[in-house]
Image 1: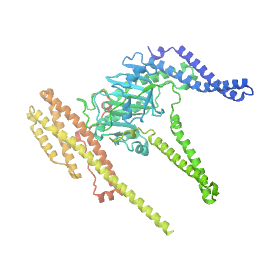
Image 2: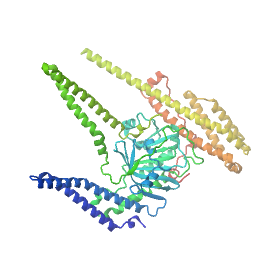
Image 3: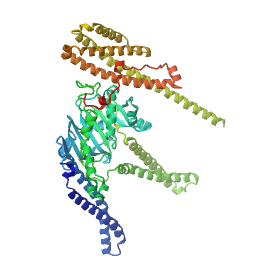
Image 4: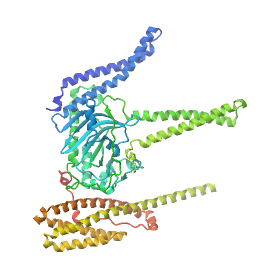
Amino acid sequence: MTAAAAADIAVLERQRRLSLRAATIAVMVATVGCPAGMTLGGSDTFGAIGGFCQMAGIVGIIAAPWIVRAWQSSMQRRMIAAAVVGRPEIHHIDAEREQAASAQALASDAFTLGAFRDSGLVESFESASVSHILAGDAQGVPFAIAELRLLNAKGYSIFGGVLASFRLASPRPGLTIVARDRGLLGNLLAHAGSAVEKLPLEDPTFEGVFEVYGTDQVGGRVILTTTMLERLKALDELTRAHGFACAFHEQHLLITFRGMSWQCPSKRILEPVGTWLDAYVQNLAGIVDLPVDIVHTLNLAAPSPVGGTPFAPVVAPAIAAVHPSIPIDNSSGQVFTSTLWRIIGEGGMPLVNMASGALFGGIALFGMWYGIKQGYSENLFWYFWGLIATGLVYGAVTVSGSLRELARLAWGWDAPLRNLKRQ
Amino acid sequence: MNIGTGGAEIVLSAAALAALYFWYVSIITRRNKVREALSSVDVHLNQRHDLIPNIVALAGRYMDHERALLTEVTRLREQARTTAPTTPEEAGKRFAIESELGQRVGQLMVSMEAYPQLKADQPVMEAQRTWTEIEAQITAARRFYNAAVNQLNNAIQVFPGSIIAAIAGVTPMPFFEAPADARVAPTVAGILGPAQ
């Protein structure tokens, strides 16, 4: 049974139309309700009606994107379930409905969420919002692959995409990270102050796309043989649309696909299901096949890079390997998760504080200049100079504190390697 | 006006001195990296040296016709062990001996294929596996060393690095090249084919 056949197109189309109608009504209510609410008035009755219209408008503004997101989640759930039909080696876990199973899958032998943080692939995070997980066995290699968002301590999204983890037959020495190349300055900043050091390799084509870091110069090269470099380039070709980064960390190969989404795009709600469903199903089928493709392309089924008995790690790993449990929840209903929200959320308050500090500090400076030049009358002397001193202190403290907050945000922004501190 | 010109001269001189100092620091850092890489190569080569007597002893039980090769391997091993490289010349000499030693042991391994008793012998199989692993690690260490040497040589052979290096007494280091029989062009099937 094919995935397309498994889903009843007519049912999906009806669902799409209903969702589109509901979202359109919500938008119309918002468009009409808010202005109407502001114009109506003059008596208690009209005032009450105006208030009601305004409330309805606000509800419409909030409801419209939620309806679209709910439709996207529903489509995604159905189509992933359809894509794994006939694939007994792959188990689909809907994180929204199977929370215990998803928590178990993300703390298993094949997949440990904390390992991604400890391997410098993603920024430091405190919790995860998981949508869907595919777990199973690809040519004898246990794996799990999850679509999720990672959230920092303040609850902002620091990573959105797909994480994949493969349990290797034997441990690899040290920690070796294959990150995307960021240009000369970007690469220098990316690992400034980090426990890992750059591993220069001989392949200019590879070095043009990737940048390799590690804790063990020799161990890293034992893993990244010239053959493995070719394999990684082949994997990059395979996943061209979703540039990957990966790390060999102890007994796992960890891969991140930043920005990869299994959802159907929201604009699809405007088009009949029949016109795009096949493409979406094929895209999901490619994702379901991705673990097997990765195992095959990187030759992970082999017991060790040189065959024979497994490698013993040459040196002890320089990075702590303790992965405390990480709280997870489902993310299917979340709407405001983009990078922009994080910038507004984390950078907005320091900017407001800085503006306030600059305003009051500036007024205090002007007052000081005026006082020095013209002087204040004797009876208001202490009053003015007291205010000026307070304004200057407030301005200095607020501006410097805000600058420190912004600098901290900028320093930690998309710089996961800096999480790796020397022990 | 004069003070301004003098100030500019001082600033320019300070900038030039700072640049030269940072160049010097970079050369010394790279030289130390080469030393680190060289010691890493040394560790893995010593592992190989430790394994060779076992291989020779195991092979000697059956390979009477290969006495000359076994003797040559033993001689090269002793020669390699007594050469601890500290200068570029010593390193070059050591690498040449190691390359020859690797080649000879490779020949020995190929010759062992002709002896069915040896091929089936458990300790021999174990030794061959260990040899393969050590060779993989030597290859990795060699790549580390060569990358470090490349960076050092580039830094000290380009002006004004050449002058700073001459003052600091830093000289170019030789590359540790793979044995001639290891230079076989990889095939696409070998690279992307199934598990080896």
